Length: 86
Image (cartoon, rainbow, N blue to C red; front, side, top):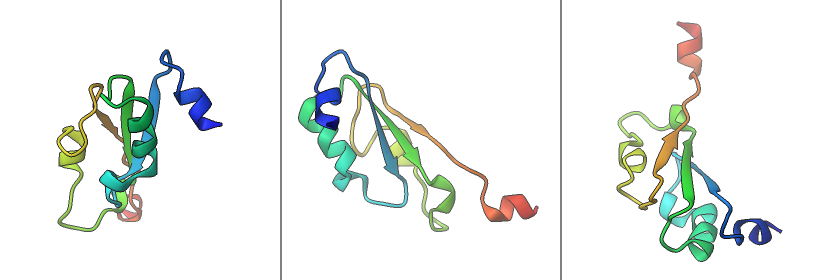
């Protein structure tokens, strides 16, 4: 069913990828690559930035350096429990 929608060349693909997983093996990005090999109509959304391990960051993902998409990536960061307490 998803392939029917993303297969339409007029559709913008919103591909959601968690920051705490390897984005090169993401099922969503693989599906987007099948129907949009050049990444022309795919926008990446990097989620779960707030639960990444200390010392790691999503900078390379957000800066479009790992898996290139023409429209780039947007990061979504929720407040961590530590932020709520403080």
